[in-house]
Image 1 (cartoon, rainbow, N blue to C red):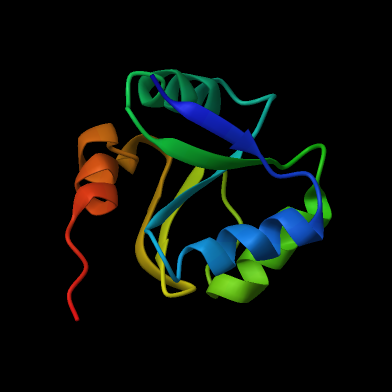
Image 2 (image 1 turned 45 degrees about the horizontal axis):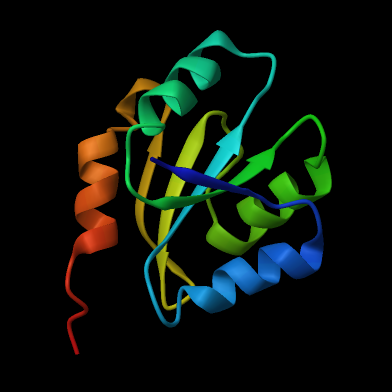
Length: 111
């Protein structure tokens, strides 16, 4: 079952980016007032994975920081897979595919 890790501070956001230097990191920008976002989050619940979540209504500053750091304008729901503090996969809305997310998270690191 998925482990949603809620990011609520800039230090936690920085730590998630830093973690991506070791393992791929899934990061979801979630809207708690959007039906599509609720459905996408529900589809992710079956994954055996950690997913870092920023709820945009509660942490607009963190959502803006993600947009600035990744170069992708804000959308929600919005999924990033980070590796080496860079975006290796980006998807939004119904383009967020749990199987594809899992494949990125489980892919061997190429050196």
